[in-house]
Every structure is written in structure tokens, then in C-alpha cells.
Image (cartoon, rainbow, N blue to C red; front, side, top):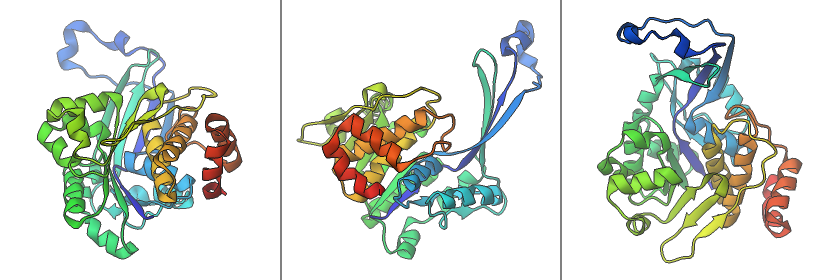
Length: 324
């Protein structure tokens, strides 16, 4: 099963200030702030929704096709993804813009000051899904993740027009979209991904009820945090999958992307929706135990040991052949 993942590709520059931002602010001078912070640490991490999902699928051996836009500074990042099982040959490279970048400083109170530079991400709207499908011998599913909003709309419309199955996964971009835009991204989706809060926001903005949304998509997948995930299909009983026990909680960033990576890897293997969700929950647990969205290591024996403990021998027997 060939799965393409569209979405942002970004570098995160994370810094730590050994003080409190609040101590540097003068109440009656906030209209003319001019501050510079000497920071202690700088960590440069790979990120972006599309790249995070593709990385997780690559770790599981699903060989995803990453579709997105980056700058000429993408070479090192590309090599990293290639080494971890991601097909990056269809990433658009901008001639004039840098790869998207998030720059953030965190103080001792965990307050943050950050900026996001979209850069080359804005050129994702130039990518044609059909051209990629022709080059790879067809696509079975396209996951349309958070990206340049115009690119998300174009990819969705193209998939719908050409009969390519797609998953709607707009996550962070839902905040800037109105009801009409969201309806356009949802209608006809094979899968609709969201967390619990986004689920309610989708219904509020579109004016659609839960039943009406299920009438517009085949499968609705809602992550519920520590309570796991719920899968709904029209006229069928919901599937609920718990999460494995955590060994520690280091950083929740990228957990949702990891779940999607595991879930879609399961789809590519042809296992049931329940098994796919279990794989997604297991991968998400590894990410929450690690600082950074692509810093975890997936060792097959360790993965299956924890998966078996969480979901039982029968479930493990259906999954382990794909991780051999």
C-alpha cells in the first residue's frame, strides 16, 4: 500500500533563558519593548507535521512518500529522513526560500517567546499529487496534514477530483480556518483525524453534528490523550483502544504525529483498524518518553515486548510479522 504524507517540514531552534521574562518587562513601557536575551542552550531539532509522521512510518518500515516544500538548506534533513526509511524524492525545493523554522526561547517559569517562519512551506501549493502518483505507480492513500492552507485545500480538491483516497488531518491549522474551509477539507475523506478538543471545534465551526460528519467521512479517528483513541464509523459500534503504560513522561510534542504514523503503518500492512490504532498508541508512547519529535529509537524487540504487554499475545501475533 503506497501512502503519501503531505505536511509541513520545519527546523525547530529551541533556546533556554536562565531567568524570568516577567522580570525584564516594565509595565508602563510595554508599548515600546526592545529586549535581547542571552541564552544558555540552543537545541536544533527536526520537525514539521509531515516530516514527523513520515519519520515514524519509516521507523516502522512502511516506506512513506513525503510530500512538502523545503529550502536548499534541506540537504542534511533529507539525508536523515532517507536513512530512516522515508522517500524524500518528491519534496519540492524552493530556489529562494529557506525551510520553515520555529525559533523559541523558554524561561525558568516555562513561559515562551517564539516566532514561526513559513518560508518554503508557502510553495507547497505548487505540488501536484497526480504527478507524484504517476511517478510512483499510483497512490492508495494521501494523508493531508497541517501545511500551507492553500496547499491543503488544493491537495484535498485534487484527491477528490481524481478519486484518490485521502485522510484529513489539519491539526494546528484548524484555528485559522472558518467553517466553509473545514467542510471543504472534510467532505469525502476516508479518514478524519483530530484530538478531542479539535473534534468539538470542527463541529462548532462547520455547524455539523457528529452524525453529519460521520455521513461525510468513512472513518473518524479521535485521540483522547491518556484515555487512548476512539474510532467511529457510521452504523457501527465505536472501537476504543487504550494507551500502553508510560515509563516516563518527557515531552508531549509530536505525540499526535506519532499516533498517525503508527495508525497509517498499520493500514499499509492491512491489519484491522483496532490493531492499527494499537500500533499508533504504542509509537505515541515512545515519543512522549523522549524529548524531541524525531529523537526516539524504535527497537523491534522492545516495541513488541511492550505492545504484547499492553494488548496481548493475539494482537502481537498479527503485528509482529510486519516488524521482523
